[in-house]
Length: 194
Image (cartoon, rainbow, N blue to C red):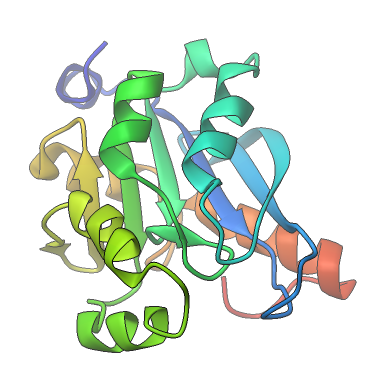
């Protein structure tokens, strides 16, 4: 069922939110990634995987995690905590949306400073390729308190979905829980900011 119909009929929207764990820059150690499944704002399940810090495998790893999971047929939307994981391992948002046949949304806490991002990525190999993947994610939409990029759905519907799947504050519950879990696994306790 499409997102607009789910919203119109006041149906529960099932999401998965992906966030990466804190990691040491310039380390070859794989970065843990949690995918938290929520029915609305209720925790329903979890996926766990690893990506390379500042690598090129985030899109493929997320696809594999979802493709092999029992949750995929139940999901309506995929949320990411930003467009990249593990530093600048950038997710190809349109590619992931096509592969899994679901809308994919990169959610941000504030409007990003694109020139600062380009400067930071300039310290890594293949800046042009990284910029191309970054720009493929498209326009950044502002529906305060949410800022997001989306592939596979219209932004008005996404703004309504984000409100529905957020318990309090500015972060959808699936992303908030994923952040708390990844922090706790690495640091021994969850962080304050989720």
